[in-house]
Length: 540
Image (cartoon, rainbow, N blue to C red):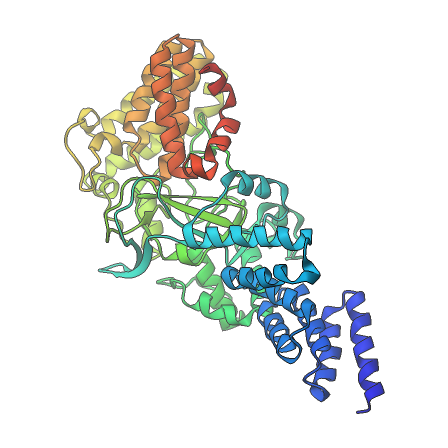
């Protein structure tokens, strides 16, 4: 091939690049490099084309080769930084950019300084778990889809073999409530808005189903990053695979089963106190088993190893594609980190069946306690729950008959627990008294509070709220609901002029809020003020 032909090929690559045909540009640059492998300029250009396709490994390889052939290639060094940053090698990326920042060519360059500041922030996140929650929340709110530019952090935890449970996650040291255990980026995530717009052009019957969207996005990712398949293959596998159409290729079926075994619904509204198990103060939780509401679906690899407990000791919250997992209560060194894979509000028999299909046998205090009750009693409680759900709209508008029935349902639900509801001293096998295992009372109490407040009976509402707080166990799945209950007590005490009580409940709520969103140093205090600014105004 003549020199003129190589020049024409390079020009062709440049022209394709200008028209954003990056794959075509790579083809042209590759043809040049086959004849002239030491051309640093073409290597650097191909590196940029790879960067624009988010193929960071190939971009780094080309950028490093370009610098190796010509150390004066400043653009190639800058592209090395971008590739290292994209590969989450933030310390190497920072060192590369610091070297460029010392070069007189870039002296005083605002872009370089800004990128260096950002890279140092990623290093602090990755090494020490230092996150500015305020910035992350605002970024998640303003970005669509909310794929956030932040580092992952793995704290005092590791994957270990758990006797009788397979792999799980344990803590490597004693941790206090609120300790950040990990912050992980999603392997892939399909958000609600993407599903609504059907951006992947899935068949109409799949449009509102989150799992097919997630599976499709995973394959798009693997097409760009085939090496990521090993990360996917290492995830927990379902005990019994779903019955799928035999025409589905085995590799697709495998991904579908991994997704169904491990996917998590991301929070729909970042940093708002929408509990994951109780949808609102005056409605029943969604107790559908085996299906999730179409809020999207995400796959987070490291958190997928966290095993189930209905009374979990950790709490997770997602901002965009980032998941933060914190200790919901103190966890001793070597103890397993646990998250609820199914809401404890789901009736016992349905919960057990859901977990059984996934090879899980839960022996938490709640399951042990409910298993000790006769099936007839459990079915009676389930029926009362269903009846309450049907009465919800009538209770909301103050229907006298519905309110009278609400009181009867509370009394009848208490009876289904066999009198244990008043036992405040005896402990369950995980440190929870039976009084805190009465999940069937939480929603009726919440609806009663709503109706009392609507009628201006604030003193009675506060009394019910206090009992409601007492029966809510200190576990991750209720962490945000406990904060909401404490803040409802703040409002009630304020209306009654009980200022000391109001201030005490504010401190209780703040501590619980920190367990979910981090301490004041992370900026969670500003999020707290944003959500509860009216309540804090009352406290001035």
